[in-house]
Length: 100
Image 1: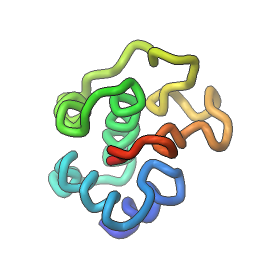
Image 2 (image 1 turned 135 degrees about the vertical axis):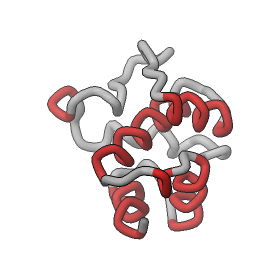
Image 3 (image 1 turned 90 degrees about the horizontal axis):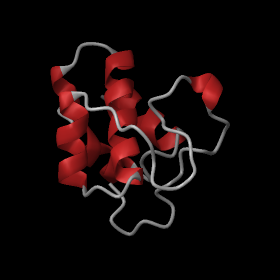
Image 4 (image 1 turned 60 degrees about the vertical axis):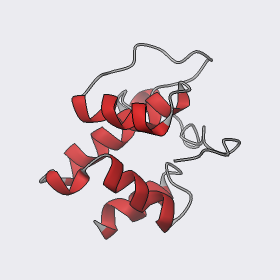
């Protein structure tokens, strides 16, 4: 889990180890077998959070695999393929006090 937590921090999905740990537990990543599946779930979670959903609701949507159709503000969804994103588009959390 340390690798996925470091990835979340590097990609600015989590601010620190504490936030990353909360995301790991909330998304039940320990039940998944591979990094790519974990990353896909984390990206879905962050999309739901960036859309304004509370953490608990975003966790539930991501675990179910619910894909958000569009963000309420102009932006790119993390669950879209990488070629549609530019560096730094992940940091919707920067001004969010309820961060994870």
